[in-house]
Length: 356
Image 1 (cartoon, rainbow, N blue to C red):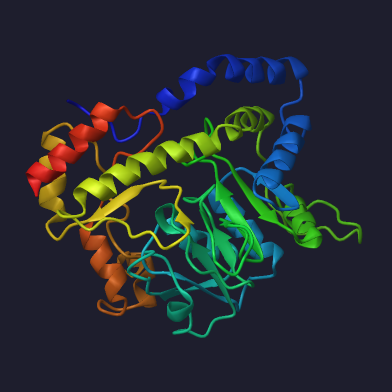
Image 2: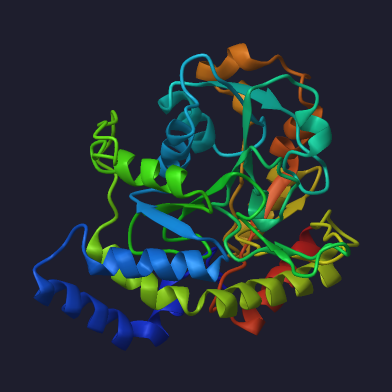
């Protein structure tokens, strides 16, 4: 049996009537940018995440970059970020004019922790929740929630669970098609409870805008289209159900593969979104080849730590970030997405067990 790594059309197919209606509505409106669809999506997105403001932009990378610029993190600002992860976060730091400073990651969450952040002295931090598992975020940091929309954790001392994006000063989200809430192209948003920060991001996304003080910022063209917003509004209503599907698939993997490979460890009260289900295995490349030979779609997130890329080699030496370096050599992402059939999950489990 062939099992695709992701099949976006399966989640979209049941929504086809609503998605077509959204398309027709936008087409008939004659307003394709900066209209009511974006406004309504922003309100719904903020409400769904328990925050006051959401500002839609054209990508998750821009969401990170504009959030930093809105906070004044520019030239002279050192921004801590993990050595293990996707290059867009480091790119966004440099695009904002700041300087990335790498830290190692926690072996459980695979993201940064208060302990790893404490190992460097920086003015700021941008903290990605890797693969949909929440990590600890200082209140002055930016959360990179590209993997974690809808993820939560419940602490005993708090009455309600904390959602991804609720720990830091603001949060950047991605709506890239494969994300937990994915559109039909790129998209992103900055969420915050700070009205001034929200206003600054809103201005920055539209050439710098004009704030109440009549000061025009050095902004960008980073607007989300009306069509993207209309489609995302339809899909937002299904985010919890899709995350539940991911969580159910992950639960089977964790139960049936833990004796063969290293599976994600969930902390008490945690409910990851499992944007990716990532295992660790010492002979990763051999396992990858064996699974692909059996028709199982797999991917590597991520094949090298940031300081192993030529442009960022000045940020660290081999051995400086041992957990990040080990993960880059051992991680492998298994199929885990809405619409995946039980027999396909069975096939993945069988293939992994036979190949290990």
